[in-house]
Length: 278
Image: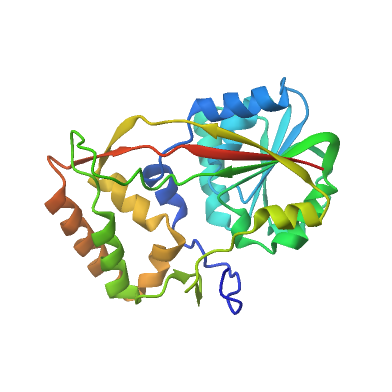
């Protein structure tokens, strides 16, 4: 369980938006293919992506729908999402700056509602209850569980060194303290679990579970891993305040000392998908 005293605030990911695109490994096209096949998506209907961040899932799934709405509580994330939409010439997506707790916000009904690495930051019983009433009778809630900042751990020999994630965590702790930071608060017990009980309590059925296997080894640069660190709520740039330049220098020194020719390698993690029906 998360710490009962922690409360969301608008600084949770302050300064992280620009680092997402660089530091997070993108969701693969096979994720869209798996969701599309499971839900018989055919380019019709509407998608709502809640806690959309910079549009990582929103833009990937947009071709499967007639219209798409991404909502997020961080305005910088939505600026980055629109930039990426413009870059990819995606024209069927709109963005709304609001917290999930403010739904339905006159957004209407949706065939699919997605949550990708976002639900744990919300008042989950409240959001689940409100979102259930926004899904069409034949629609679905799709929860995407993934870790896109970091690859698989282990002793497998790769063609470049792995990023030194343990040392990175230790460096962050030396600046911010041993207890995980999140916005203006602390998360000594991490983010909450127990999603299934919450979903069933408000009337969802399921879930249908899908695993999107990746497994490929990818190369990552020092810049990419640096941005991966700053994309985390526990190491968002604002947390370091006036010590940010010193931390950045120490982080880059650590990464450069471990990398070979400025490169790392990691094996990408599988992605879990849970599909719930209203």
